[in-house]
Image 1: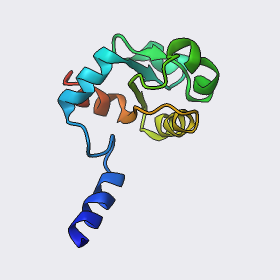
Image 2: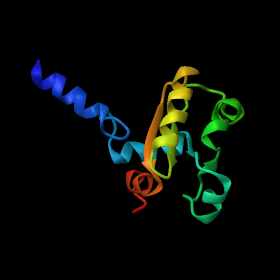
Image 3: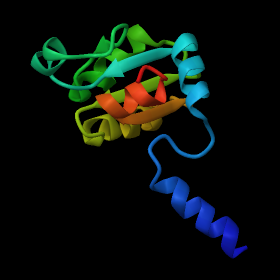
Length: 115
């Protein structure tokens, strides 16, 4: 029982959780969408090709037009993971079931096998 509890605690502090491997993130992206939750200026300076810019505070207003099916995979990133985490919480509160915060752009690139 202690092992299961410890594994659960570790999963809570692991970006993206413990249920998916890096290969799953690439598959999720093929099946869903990758959102850059930073500012337009940050996105203009650098971004992951194919990502869609939606600043984190606008995600709740814009997500339905981009992702009408709440079972569609949604991957998120920002500069550090904080804003993507806020967007992730908002999406979960709205009923989206497959949402992953990949953290920073660099962490997202690694998770997607781009680095």
